Length: 550
Image (cartoon, rainbow, N blue to C red; front, side, top):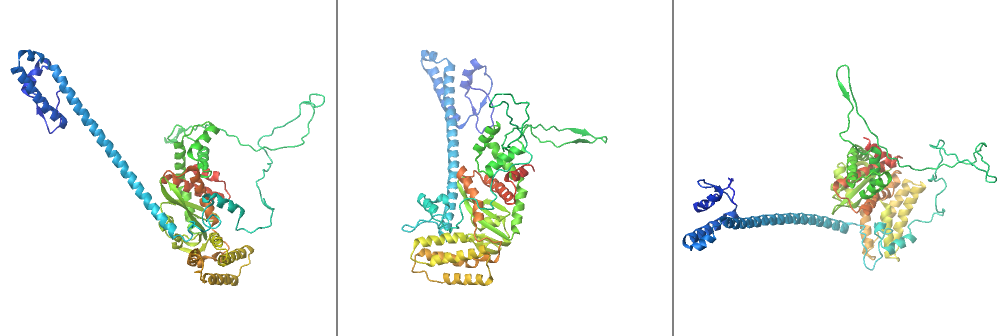
């Protein structure tokens, strides 16, 4: 049955008088005028309905009386009309849903295309950087394979054969000392305490010989053993807040948190420590907390705890950066890290007291300027030969000699009949020995520089192209090879920075990638604070706990 209604529409149709006349016996519509509004598909159906009714009326007038008697039930006709209208409405709804689904598919494809274009741009930039790098770590067919001992390839990316070769071959010279801890080494042996927390007495009760009871016989202590153990205790503390009304009428109350229940500082610090320091993923942290304490903590809660603690660490993190700006010696390095589906870069700037780590989409000067826009004007910067470091405003540079020794070792393996690379290694090792022995004079430094100048001035055209390529790279940084001889606080390698970013690679190996930029930033910030605390003789856990308690 049709229902009367008034709708805001640009199309309205009057039902024919014949239809109203036919409807009047059943619906008492006689004498009234009704306006109906329909959709586009319904408009077309209504035209068909009018045509059908016209034909039906003609059949009633002109057809035999027996045929008219067969069509006296108007309900059948109306039901047919309603069924046809419902089919049209269903068809329109299905088409609308299909259009919406196709639009969603198109939007999804647009996002995927954008992501692929971004990844392609990052890949092209990375390829360009690798091609331009002087210490390209790729191996050439017919030449010795590059590994961690003769190039900048990390041990984790070595082949099995190279790994075994490295285990039996080293650039280090035998020291003649026995293996293990050396005299004077502090070690990690357990130490007894003067006042233990608990004392448990073990006294014999019966005689081993005759079985007599020994309770009343005095005993004599013959030995003591202290046991260091850890006990996991779950404690629920209820904090109650009150108010007091002063005689002056002022209502005084303590500021209370706007929550019914929450995790305590110790648990929050432990969660942060496990993720940042021990690199344990969210899921395994939740399992560990549940197994030890019986508290069912979700992965989302772990993430929220890290995010909250990262926000509390902002001031300490910024303080580390400011102190580095005035430091006399700073080491720097960078390493790739996946954030979602994209390759980002984790940068480290550090010295013996400070560690500052941050992540960026860029591996160029843009990333450095975002944190150190004025450079490090008071610092001697110790780095590898990545060109972005040499664009910084610094007091001086020191190139990592460990990198150069590995690169030169590859040249030895490439051509064992030449001695140019061996003389280069000998010259670098001689400078390091002078530093270790403390036997440094201005004259010796001058002699070293002269010998290096003469060595780099030799023609290497008769050797493999790798020799000339290596020499060109050294010529670009020749003024920064022996800076460490003039400044005792400057190291001759960048191993400290490389160790600092190793934690990032461990995190990547365990978790695969950082899910978001925010997660990568949180890890870098909290890692910086933990490492800085360790360098200053403090506990990493206590440093994180101090952040949580702010």
